[in-house]
Image (cartoon, rainbow, N blue to C red):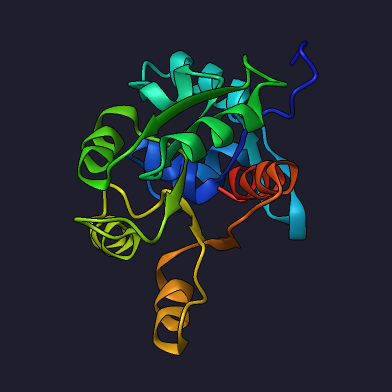
Length: 194
């Protein structure tokens, strides 16, 4: 890429899902030289977004909207508008790299998840009406949203039961108050591991 951003890559399993193919078929495409792949962390094969797009278009495969957009999508759900504005500013340094959406109530947030299709959800756990715990439970129970990376934030100290829940339902937990640079770094880590 020419703008210096690290390009998104996909595992062979993710490519299989995006192409509607078996994992073994993707491995055959790579072995035959039809699909370019490089060794990633732990020597697992990774396919760059641009190479995947080229391959899918050459095979007349339907390209999902998430591949068309080079920017990464972050949805912030927090009932405090001041916090959502502060969080949104964490990515002001790279406005072309991220699409940020904010919502101040979890019910509207669930609707926005379906519309916006975020890569990462930054989620306050303690909200009225519907808690962040409930949102996590809903998202992880649905195959369509299960792969969204969740960074949970909480001002309180989770009890032992909550910690066990978060281990199963959130990808990372950050305490409030938070350091904006560290939070942005944590989100970037989740985006890279997606």
